[in-house]
Image 1 (cartoon, rainbow, N blue to C red):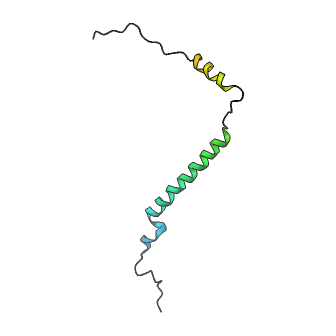
Image 2 (image 1 turned 30 degrees about the vertical axis):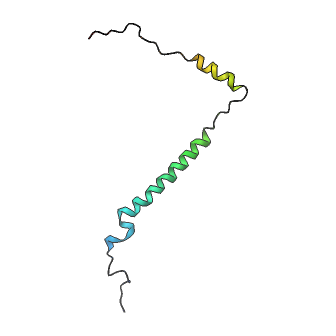
Length: 80
C-alpha cells in the first residue's frame, strides 16, 4: 500500500491550482464583470429616467433657442 495519492507523483505543493496565479486571474475576470453589473443596476434603479409628459414637441425648440452661441472673435490677428 502506498501512502501517496494517485496524483502525488506528478504534483507538488507549488502546483496546486489554488496556489497558482492564473486560475485566480481567470476567476477574477468574470467576477469584476458581475460586480460592475451590480453597480450598473444600482445606478439605474437609484437614478430613474425622467419621462417628459405633455407636448414635448414644443419643449424641444424652447431648449434649443435658449442656448447661446459661442462668441466669435471678429478681430482676428493674422500677423505673427
